[in-house]
Structure formats: structure tokens, C-alpha cells
Image (cartoon, rainbow, N blue to C red; front, side, top):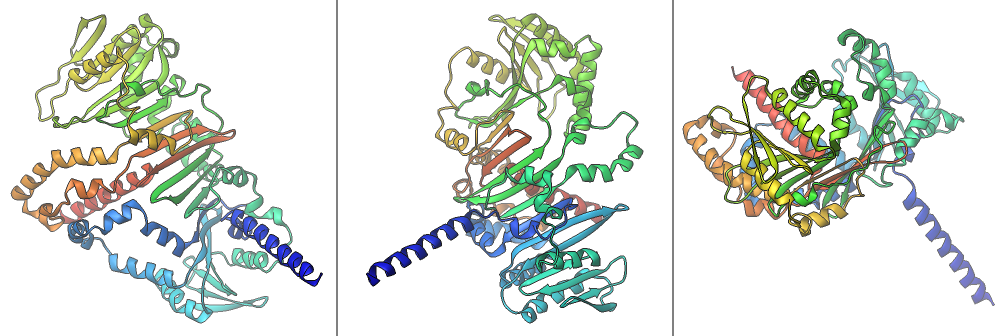
Length: 565
């Protein structure tokens, strides 16, 4: 009988352990931090477990590529040019020794255009060991560390370093370290963590916009950020009124309530989730109807919905070609093309494909739209030929029931022939007539070139089905083609411009086989979920990370070039 009682007790303990483990595993990563921050928080960056994320990063495809000896040999020279590279590595190593968890930085409020910051993390080890590292950081951040005072608050001693307005208050609370440029806010955080503050509704965890955004994020992530866009927009409203002319506000931006994003590691891949809280902009659902135009040599496929009602404000959308597109749409409008013409002529889903044949020097890029009304579509195509370049001459031919509009550009290194092809079912726009005609012919026959690709099918399954936008990028194929096209040019450039060798040794560029084996497709999918748009991106790097990776070196090189003049 005693054995039976002991077994029952052990079973109860085991069951309790299972329940605790499950509940603990399902506890959102953000919970420990958001209960410490005020409801007024307008921005947050949260890193739940630095060491675990760093270890997961080391298992990613892109990190394994970076660790290749040939890649290290090639990067040694350009990386040596980066400012404070050794300092950054040392800081990361010091941070790793602290075993930090729940590291965060938040903008708790904005008053008189001055942001109030708060940050902190949980550390492993003693307060004295943590202070050896934190003290060094504090001295680097604060300009005048000689000005220092200590304030007693409850059972804590708050150190205030620096002179206003460059002043930082820091405090330890057990295994927590906190810092802020607002002493009152730091005291409020201590009240919450020590449970003197009794109003949970006054914290960020109870704020409606944050709660609406965070439900779209994964439970576990490596990094999360949140911005209460409405609060930021209201603070910047006066500045926008000064910069913009009356009535020139971007209505879409004004409708955004919140923005939230998270990054996590997924079987060696990077996965981003981005949520934008905004009313639904369109009810039409994405069909990816241009997918069947892809081939085995398609490295880029994009499908998205367009809204002609918003063409008049496209220059405000932040697109690199926004001003040029605005001129095109304005010229088309002057030619008599109305919003109703766009809606009546086409199914308002635009697809774009980029193919790069192995025997071709450069890729071919086309854009397509399905035709609903051929008469209206023809009127719009005629107007576009004048809107794209009002001074250029276009020729029109007809072949197999398809109308081709072509513009011959002056001879140049990259001779292009902008072409619009229009059939009763499809409009195709491209930069060379051959690729446009080839794609039009392919549209008349069933094609499974891209859709039957195992790379495409695997990538498409990695994200949820899109309702508004979809992007597929075969990075291995793209890199192989770029290597074949650019390597000879780089070698020749290095021979004629020896200064290039100060930044990079082009003779050490890794072979495409070494690089491509670590690359897989990047895929991105956007859908509407009840109260906002959710965008997923998966790949060796995600689309946003790729943009940052391309943009930062460009900024650095541009800065260096400016300083060298």
C-alpha cells in the first residue's frame, strides 16, 4: 500500500513537471520585459537569450559560408577596413561572458521631441563581475564620466553618470541590470520588478496595439522589435506639416497603428516575420497567375497586387523609382487614362520574372498583367508608350494576333529595346524585344518549368499562402550567373585600377561552387490577417537582411570615397 502511495506521488510530481515544462515552453519570450515597461512605450528591441541566439547563428547556412577558408581569405582585406572591427568583436565576447538574457532597449516616451530610453538585461554571475564590463561600456557612452552621484531609492543605489542632457542612471537589482536617461522611469521599472507597482494595466504587456501585434509573432525568437507607429506619427506630425505641402500627407502611413517584427533561426535558415497593423487596403486575393511563365532558369519571381486609386501618391511611397513612376502615371492620365480604365482593362495583379540563361551575358526581366478588356488594354498600352518617354519614337507591329510596341534606344554598353506586347489575354513589358516575344509565345503553351522545380516547391511550402504579395529568389542560380558575368570584368578592372586592391583582392574571390552550396532560395509571402499585414521571409538570409547587407557596404564605400577627395 505504501508502494502504491509512493507511485501515485511520483506520478503526480512527474505530471506536474510535464505541465510546468509545457507551460514554461509556451511562455512568450517577451513577457519578462513587457511587464517592466510603461504603457506609453513607443519602441522596443528585445533579445531573449544572447548566447543561445549566437550558438544558433553559428549553425546557419550563411555562417557556415562565412567560415569557409576561401571566403575568410577573400574577406580578410575588406573586413580590415571596417572601423572598430576588433572593438565590436571584443564587446560581443564580453557580453557573451555575462550570459545575458532578456536584453532590451526601449523608447518609453517622447516629450518635447526628446526620447526617453530604458534598457537592461539579466546576467549570470556576481554584480561585481558584471560591473567590470558594464563600467567600461558606461565610460564609453557618457561623454563626461567625471560627473557622478548616487541616489538611494528603496533598497537600491542608483548611479547617475554624466551631466545633463547626456546623463545615464544605472542600477542593479539582483541578477538584473537597468539603465535609463530618465531617473523617474528607472525608479518605475524598479517598482514593477520589486512588485511595488500594483497596476498591470499600466504596463506595455496590457497595451492594446502591442497585444494586437504580438499575437502574430512566433513564441520563441532570436530578436524582436516593436514600434507604436501611431504614437510616433503624432509626435512627428508638426515636422511633417513643415516639410510637406498641405494635403500632401501619405494616407497609408497615417493609417499604420503598429509595426512588429521578429527573427528566428529555423533549421539553418533565417526566418523573419513582420506585422504592420493597418486596415485592409484591397480585397482582391493574389492568384500568382504569372507563375506558369517561369522556366528552370528563372531566378526571380514576384507577384503583387496594385491599386490604381493610389497611383497619384506613389511618389510618396518611398520606392526608388517612385518619382519616375509618378511621371508615367501622370502622363498616362493626361492622355485620358482613368482609374476605371486600369481597373477595367486588367486584373490588377502584376507579376515580374527574371530569367538568366547560362549562355546569356545578362538577365532578361519582364512584367506581366492579365487582360480583362482588350479594347481598354490597347488604349492604355498606346498611352503608356508616350508616358514612359514622351520624346521617344515607338514602332508598332503585329505578329500572330499580338501587338508589339517597341522603342529603340541609342547605342550604348547595354543596348535595350523597351517593348510592350499585348494579346487578348496578357500584357508583357520588358527591356528587350526578344525576351518579351519568347515569353508571349510561352504563354500560349502550358509550362511547368518553375512550378515543377523542387527548389521552388520547397521554398513555397516554407511560408503560408500569400494573399497580397509573393517573392521567390533563387540565390544559388543568381550568384552563379553573376560570378560568370562579373568575374572577368573585376579582374580586368583590377589590372587597370590598382587602387581596387586596397579594398579587395579580386584574385581570391571564392569559386561559385564553394558559395552556391551554402545558398538556398529566399522566399517571402504577405497575407492579411484580421487587423494587419503579415509578411514572412525565409532563406539563408531574409529579404530585409539582404537589403541591409547590400546597403551598408554601399554607404561605407560612399563615405570613404567622399573622405578621400
